[in-house]
Image (cartoon, rainbow, N blue to C red; front, side, top):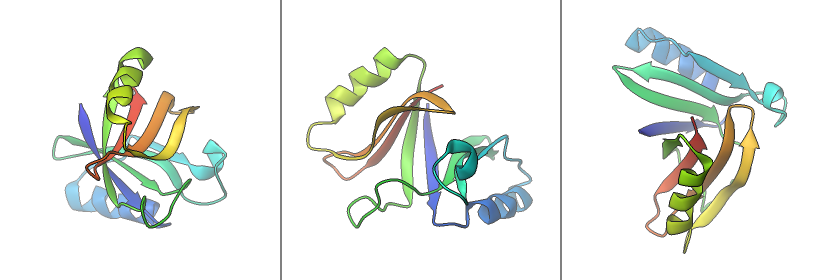
Length: 126
């Protein structure tokens, strides 16, 4: 499954409320940066469904500079860490790593990068 991921700079929670109202949707997952141990304010990870399409949202954190500050990326959820790592090994050559492979409260295995064709990807476990 490929999921659009929207990145915000401190206004993710307000955007979620707006999208909930506009699309008659409800965020079914919302983890704050405080809960995730990343910082004080903002949303570390949120998920909602808009017109049948899963969408992920967050306030961007971690490595952020001119080469990695992309507002939308594609999230691929894998059922096994082996499948995730196999796909990442194929795509990582010539890529820019944003978040090194790690474990997070909402994903056992997670990595985020921009491939050699300038497409930003986030791989995570279901």
